[in-house]
Amino acid sequence: MSIFELWWKRRAPRWFRLQDDDVGDRWITAVGGMLDLVRNGARLAARAGLVAKCPDDAVPYHGEQRRIEPLNASETVDAWRARLLAAWDHWDCGTTAALEALIGLYADCTATLFDSATHGWFLKTFDAGYGDANDDNWSRASLVLTDHSWVRVAIGPGLVVGPETVVGLSMTGTELRRIRRVWREKRPAHMVGADLVVVMDATTPADVLADHSYSTGPYDLWVTALGPYKLIGYTHHGMTVGGITVGEIVE
Image (cartoon, rainbow, N blue to C red; front, top):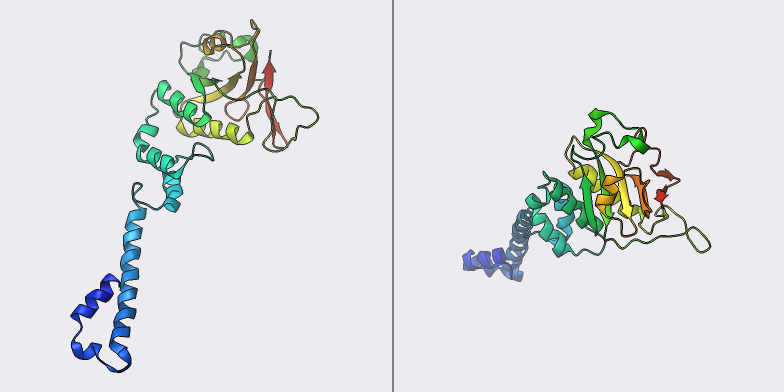
């Protein structure tokens, strides 16, 4: 029995409830049920606005509002909800370390960001292979990914090429778009993405930083634009052809 139905039955006069054909009781059941629907709807609406209390199907709306997407298709609703409850920590990206940690979380790897004015492009050593000697470009940043699970993929018989294909790497198009989207949404406004470097061997981020032209290797790197747009002078950046992403392979 609903709350309002029980309340009406207790409050209604005896003569009302004892009418022929139980008209009184049926009226109480109908009206009480409708009032309970209104009550429950208001209660659910209030809960839907609270991340900790909302039903599972409301979590994506909170994620969209806070611009915090699932880490991957296998992340549980409870895990996503917990990250939404810590939204202040998620958006605390005022430092390089915080931004690296966030990108590493979404990419499931170790991310190292070169965004300091003491790095190569500000000192004009970036000009060797990039044609970028403009001091105004101090805000350009490159991202190096290590400790990941991606492997080399050779183009040949048996390889199905489609919109999710990233040539030369087992990274999917969805993963690449997620990395770029997290960078675009969480970076400080003054920073412009230059390189996205995926290290396939024992090369360290410090090695990449010390040699932006990758000329003193040998290195095993996969390089594309972090943007995802190409920057003027960055002729080594990969391109997207028919939905297939092509990156430069440095060996």
